[in-house]
Length: 111
Image (cartoon, rainbow, N blue to C red; front, top):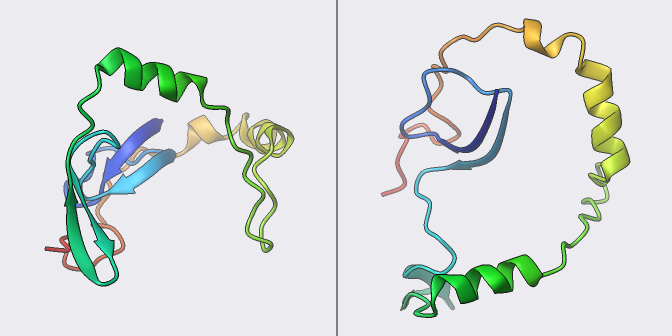
């Protein structure tokens, strides 16, 4: 099972095989957000452009290849294809137990 965004504060009742993003809160890139600048927090306003214009910019942006971190191989199409081929006969046989862990932060909340 694939889960795009996995919330560690309120985990899914079924543990996914793959999660793209493990999060506590998800804020869209074009939405209002807070960021840290020189140890101070700065509130940035939402992008007021029409949704179609934001979508066109995202769709026209070329993908950037991940070069790896010098300790693990880069996630090239060949590497991912080889990984999937190596597990394709067994991965659906795994258990679908409830995810009991609350994630990497023991308190389950940052704030």
